[in-house]
Amino acid sequence: MVRDDFIGTVQSRQAADLVRAWVRLNHADLLVFWNNGTSWDIDELTDFTRRLRPLP
Picture 1 (cartoon, rainbow, N blue to C red):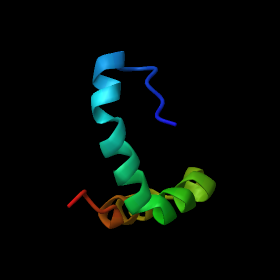
Picture 2: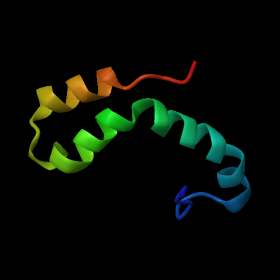
Picture 3: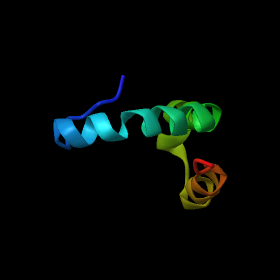
Picture 4: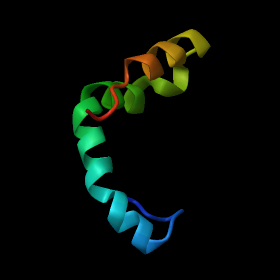
């Protein structure tokens, strides 16, 4: 489910499919971040963001 608390409903609907596709593409890394990211230092966070893949 796409959370749209911070953007308008129209924009949320327009972006929802792209957001879902990006999350599917990066699911494993996002899950590791969700479970462990609060304890990461800046180098680990930087490495994480570099691993995230853009949509083709």
